[in-house]
Image (cartoon, rainbow, N blue to C red; front, side):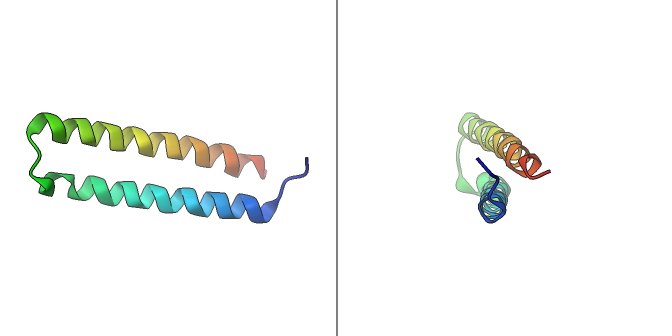
Amino acid sequence: MALDKTAIDDVTFSISGAIDAVESALDRIEDCGLDDYEQEAAKEYLQEGIKRLDMAYDIVDFAED
């Protein structure tokens, strides 16, 4: 199957937006009033989400090269 440049651009743009959204959530998580355990767990999950989104971005972006 041939690579679809438009689809690749759409996907990488969407992933970038998702990363920005998760980073915004990380910036605000401390303002939620969660207890320490909940806050740290949420931070860890959000950070893991960013790592996985970065990995997905790299896979799609490098397919174009």
